[in-house]
Length: 214
Ligand code: HEM
Image 1 (cartoon, helix red, strand yellow):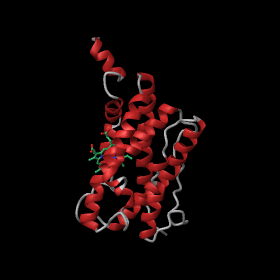
Image 2 (cartoon, helix red, strand yellow):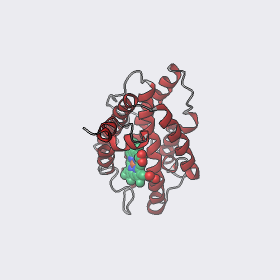
Image 3 (tube, protein in one colour):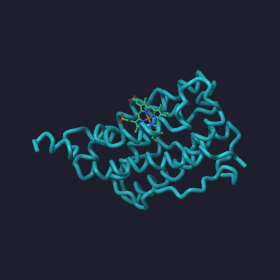
Image 4 (spheres, rainbow, N blue to C red):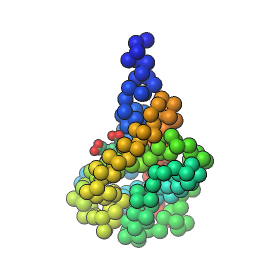
C-alpha cells in the first residue's frame, strides 16, 4: 500500500471536516430523500408535513442537546454550546403552529440511541452533524419563506438559525473541530458518533412520518 493510501484510509491527510463529510455522506443523502424532508424546498410542500418535521426535530434536539450539555460539563470542556442552542427555536416555531410537542398526542414513544457519556471526540462528531445542518438550514429557510410564507418570527425560527451569522458561526466551529480531531483515533470516534446522530435523526423522522396527532 502506498503512503498516500495509508494516510487517506486513516483520515489524517484530510481536514477533520472533510473526513466527517465523507464518513456521513451516505447518511446525509438518505436524510435528504426522507419522505418528510424530500419536498421541503419545493412549492406545494404541505404545512402539516412541516409540523411533523418540527416535532421530530424537537424530540431529537431535546435528547441530543442534553447529552451535549452533560458531556461538556463532565469533561470540563471549554467549548460553549450556549449560544448555539436550538431547542428554544423549535419550541417557538411549534408554539406558532399551535402544537405542544410534549402533549400525549405528539410525544415521541421511541427510546433514542444516545451514548450515555460522550467523550470529547464523540461530542464533536455529534456537534459536526448539528452545526453542519445549519448550513443546509439556510437554504431550506429561503424556500419556506417563498413557498409557505414562514419567517424567523412566524414559524421558521429554527431553519433561519444563525441568519446572516451562519458563515461566521460555522467557521468558528470548524476551527475548533480541526484542533479537537487531530488524529485518526479521534476522527474515527467522531465519525461513528456523527453517523449515529444522522441515524437517530432518521429514526425520529420515521416515527413522525407515520404519526397523526390523536
Ligand atoms: C432536505 C433536507 C436537507 C437539505 C436540503 C440539506 C442541504 C444541505 C446543503 C445544501 C448543505 C451544504 C451547505 C453549504 O456547504 O453551504 C448541507 C450541509 C450539511 N448538512 Fe444538510 N440538508 C438537509 C438535511 C440535513 C439534516 C437533517 C442533517 C443532520 C441532522 C444535515 C446535516 C448536514 C451537515 C453535517 C452538513 C455539512 C456538510 C459539510 O461538512 O460540508 N442536513 N446540507
